[in-house]
Length: 415
Image: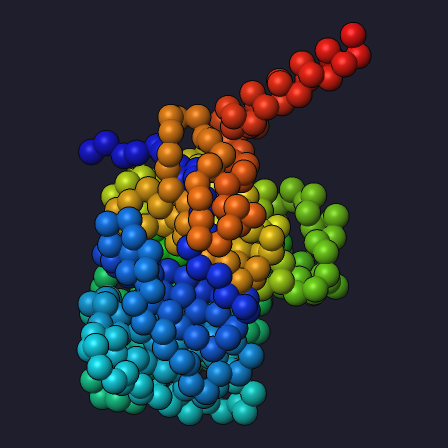
């Protein structure tokens, strides 16, 4: 199969909110885009055949501060969302009439409680959540009750995932800097023990993405790195202790402090780090920024892409570890980014309140966008795409020509 090497390079703003955008993902078939923001609204857009048109706006319920995470059901008929609340909220979006809201009670022990990460099982029958109380939760939709409440981590759980379509293997990670692997077939809720751990980050983990093959996964971290892991290479107790010591030594808060030089410039590998590859060049600040594998259909999962605290989208080559593209188009951090499953199209969600869409235009050399946008020229066009080939950074062809023209004018004036 031929996989496109084209990386989206042309940007336009497709939606603008008055508040920060937190979540944004395509449905499994790419026909719908789900967006949530701090205005308590969940918006659904029709994205079939290259379009981006709002089709429904849902007012979220029981929201504390913001909607924190969202997810589509595998069949696309429902969405779930979470906030600072005891409940996961489920909305049936298949009907065109009145919205059907259901509050799924997790009955946590803590009063100050939030689900930071939520996802459906591959058959849609169960919902997995990771919470601020260090517990993992499973809610069974058929039985309409919580079926698992497990003390899993030493700090907030920021991300949870099913490893593959079997839904037997779970991943979890959080502010303790460790990613854990759980097998539900041998899990004891009273004394939960992971089948393995991944240690090597020196700060909290913000997000997990599974490659879907039951073998590889990536984690994004406040230590300003993404790490690639192989489930056949778990970390030892030495790695776990090294991660604990590293996190204890940090005294900065990524939510409002600049990244310390010692963190930004660190290339030190912790003892017991069993990661396959480490990717550096993006910034994790202000919020729980997401990272993902690129789609199978158009890229063969050859890339890893992530949001960035600087307002960029960063794309890495999986095998080499090199940064291959930096898409610049936002004025605040990009918290979420989603690559269309079958089109060469990326949609980014930013704290500047904008939803930007990137598609591919032109030749293999990246071009700056000349596109028009209903939100005006200041929100579209003129966005630099930096490509890094074999570690050498080069500008887009049009910007290079503009620079040469300025140099000629300057030289003529001096003469």
